[in-house]
Length: 204
Image (cartoon, rainbow, N blue to C red):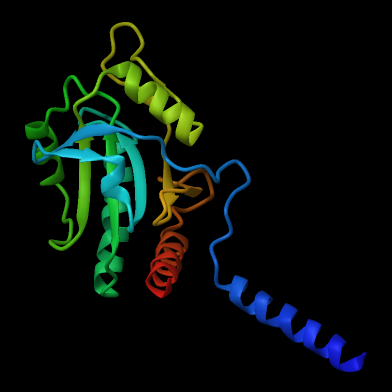
């Protein structure tokens, strides 16, 4: 009986140790990203299947944004720079434009050039769809809003979160993409979580 109890306790301790390094999913997520086919800044097709086998960070931005998008993109750039310094591979970034009529591949290429993105980082700036697609894609997958500009404005309403997606395409959690009140942009947490998922994927 004692041997059985010791074996059970040892197993529980092992499982606890294994899960301690895992990234804990948020309860509102856990579904896979739905199928899509869009166009990147290089005017190349990018699909849901192209995500397979890689850990992803995802954001919603637009190039004419006068408020949150520049700091969001700069924050994401800093994440990629830190991951690059660590020599981490097998991850990528997706930034979906919420203003696809304006944000052509050429415009997105110019926008990407404003930031010091590491040369080896795969960062897909995405367009090539209509407003209804991006509204539904954001809401159905990421529980976030994309709304047209108010009358007389060109500023699209959208969320400022970054989303973590594992190598199976499952949405794991979100983070604030900008400083929020007394809360600073959680760069260290994002880098750590990406590292954990990449290492987990490499072990499988």
